[in-house]
Length: 394
Image (cartoon, rainbow, N blue to C red; front, side, top):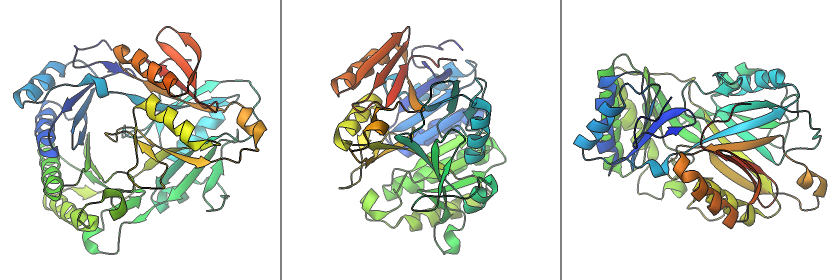
């Protein structure tokens, strides 16, 4: 796909735009116009704006015109997409394991993609390098309890009884979610680290009206709700831990807002799909958590969690996965020296890549190699990220 204009840089192979908006209501107004153009477009509504992703250039100018008509300006400087890359001697076997973990679909590059286009893509690259020790990076995935059972990963291990390993030894904590509460008024909601409800819709009008209703209720409560529009679907999400009072810090009980959102969805005839909620985050072990976390904040443009004693960093627009850090025993010198079997890849618009690279190096990163449009860096303890202007195949 070629770039459809300055509003639409191609990010990870997809023409993508971000339009700043002063509230969810204004963003939902844009989303309403977009779904009238095409029910196939992907829109992520946030309290500060809306991200739109196109599979073709056909509607790019119409979307940009609708945004201008609503007084919303494009801001391509905030766009990025984070994915996870596994290196394996047996890609097909590793792929099958992670497909069960996530319930992902096969990707065009031999990896795996989220059919809902919310959680990070998995790339799998051929490698023969021997790395027998545990990675310092693992994934956490939270899904409804029935979905976790259906994944059939075998007996779990670890202190919480949720850790599984793929055939190469890469780890995932596959955590069963639960109902948000016991109230009938929140029966559509699952607690999967986020509080989330996924509604099947039957028409663009119903999708538009549900997005508008959710935006109005959230803005009235002062809550920065996440509202994602997908073909035939509206996903309403609190963001990780944000439904808990110590995380949002607002004078509200999120379950009251969840109940109001559920009532609005049901009044519009939308039906909850209790099997769809999914949350994924990335976990890094570090001997010097502060130094490693500083690198990743700079490399990804992330923000620290507001809570004291919490190591999380997150995308300020909550469009990419949360990173969590925990202390590693500094005496594990061999494990610290071993290169991980997985790393991250960050796709950014071409004019932003060198700026992000400079920020990462200034925060303690090391440039390992450079090809055209692709820079591989290591953080202070050797965890790697590739900053790329386009998705690199192979």
